[in-house]
Length: 332
Image: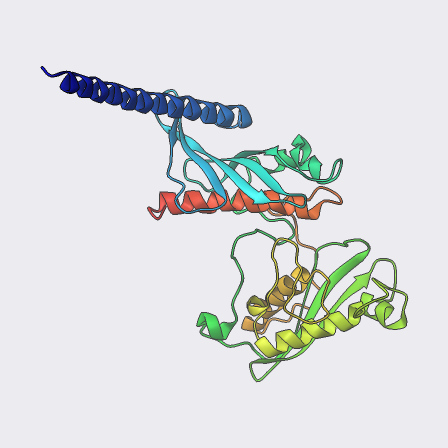
């Protein structure tokens, strides 16, 4: 055999061996990483979910779902799901592990493993006092009406409801005081359309409302820009124009909006309470001043002074729930 043929064969053999080694090393690396990720899930959700076996699931095109596992117990039965989520907190990206039941309708537990929140404020979402609230709660979870997923109500006209809004004035209010004020919205419907809106807040232990204080100068947010009552008026006009709180544009994570000139306040209460008032209008039921609702099975409390961080965790939990629901319905 000619020398050049022998050399070529040697080079070809070396190349084949190199490719095989590289492929083998890649497989080994993938296996090691897979085991590390599974161990991370077990560590994060220890005691919350039986994970004798973990079956990795395709996360699809989700930007929030980082990893997902179907968990099985020692007998091989499905015990639930372990989902690693990444959401935006107040200080930056936040990693949250969420455990859900086999049917995906109830949370088994939750743990924040990575966060960049403010020390002793937002960082407290890692503490068991906050995270333990999720265990055993029905999904989706709520924090003062917030879910982080698209649950916005539509108006009767858009939803195809059989009955339009009935004439009358309807009021919805928050169940408790926030920083000394309890927000409420009053909506007047005439001939099936919103013709007047009043967004205000009762002040605790006072006969004055936030709007009255803003008008007389005793409630001042900033020396620059529109005052509170002026910003409220902008949103009231926006609702009368759109005739639908679900069409108001704002960031559901922090309640802020860039869509309405001069508005810098959190408008999430306004949107939510407007939708509640219009629910009354469907039946013509003016309930007037509502009694505070009892805490439901799926309500949690925010960490004091860290609402944005708390909402980020709620969003992570509910997006994990949404992913499992799509999965179990064959859509993921």
